[in-house]
Length: 267
Image 1 (cartoon, rainbow, N blue to C red):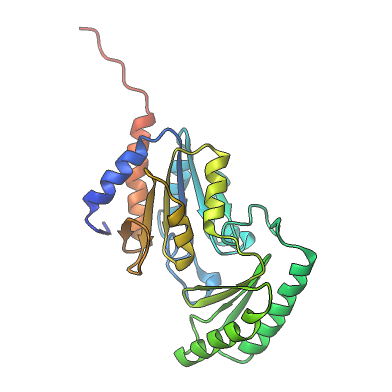
Image 2 (spheres, rainbow, N blue to C red; image 1 turned 30 degrees about the horizontal axis):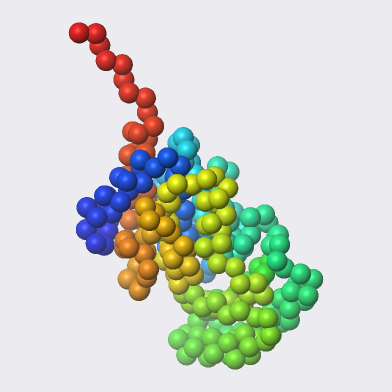
């Protein structure tokens, strides 16, 4: 069993309280949280048990499971392999339907094309880089690039297309994203909470873009940071396997709560 940080007793106390919630939302980031970070973004897949445990949680009464990711919704759908009962939200909490972000205008779409063209020129011929075009942003991935190339590309993207009017720069793990609409994972989380009148939430994430969601959590909610970086989350886990372990324990507790008591035999 993968151990959590701090000691398991702390997070076990938290998930025991969550298991008793009237209406529970279990929400996770994808890359680095349910999937090990991959050198090629298209190679990311959920770790063993991730799909099964979210599906199992979503089957319980008054319990909802979701993934809120920076990936485009179509990319997230294809790579996550989640069943329909696990709700998927892409583009940092702003894409609930494939390709549809309400705040994006025709002018924004033209700006995205301009950003993509400039970013292509910056990474042209540089090994280990990849350009991803999303409904409201473009992302330059450089995890597989040399450290000198990665630093140069990051600086060029920020100083060049990242400085254009109306462009928001989002820095993640080995990726820099240029967005024409600055939505956050907190926006997506709040919409899900409102949609189902949620009374308690677990949110797990590993990246800087997950901090907005951690900050949006209320008393009685549980924020779980995956990895050692500074975070507003109260609890920490070491890796995606540890996330699955905690969700499985939550499922056991939640399932026990929802099962009817066995009839007592007459005395």
